[in-house]
Image (cartoon, rainbow, N blue to C red):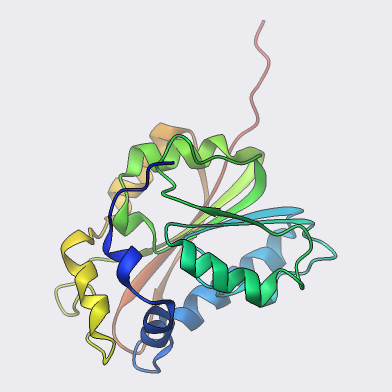
Length: 217
């Protein structure tokens, strides 16, 4: 696979996790909580987490129910840490290093896909097409988007200054554009909600399903 250069390849996992976990930011906790709620609601037998980093939220996976777990991240060093943390706890853990937009990155379809805070860094059409290809019919796609805001910085200031290198490549997606793109791809909406963190940052959680193909005569 040909992974293009991205600032994500130069940000240490400790910096990313430290930044996201700061009480003034709280995004790591939010992402993990939403994941826990959704896998509790849908009880999928197979899960793929796109942009999994070091495995935030993997502690909530019930391996007696979810028999197959896939993690995808563009930074292979993040996946090395994830493997160290969870390979012994999650049997058959599958990890894929690469850009989810890369046609060569693929895996067998799953029941549930969680893509939190990744659409800000990818092109919508090819990414959604790939996610549809790895989502089983009647499967679920859950996405967490950071909402555009004039009141807060796209990347919050913190002592972890290397995160600021993401600012030039970060593109916040409007819910209207996202819904139009998912509809065009063939995902149908199930539910949506907004989350406002104490920092003032706002996020949208969108849940979709991939309809089963109907036989036509």
